[in-house]
Length: 68
Image (cartoon, rainbow, N blue to C red; front, side):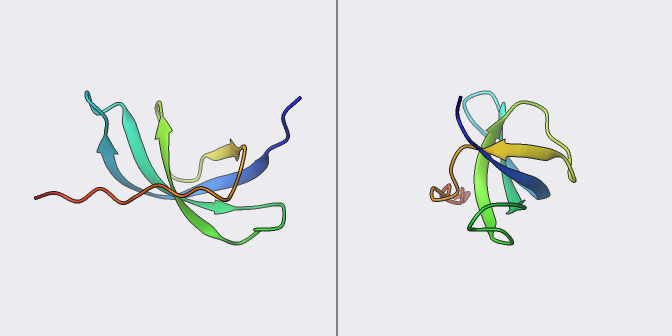
C-alpha cells in the first residue's frame, strides 16, 4: 500500500486543463518531514478551501500558470 502525507488546501489559485477540470491550489503539508511547507499542486476534481487531501510525495511542485 502506498504511503502518503496529509495536506490541507489553503488557497485555490486558478483553473487549468483543456476543459478547466484541473485546479491549481496552494496546499500546506500537515505531516511528514516537510510539515508546514506550502506547495503549489495541480488537483483534478472538485476542491474547496480547507479540504484535506493526501499527497503521495512532497518533492514535486507545479509550475504557476500565467496568462499572456
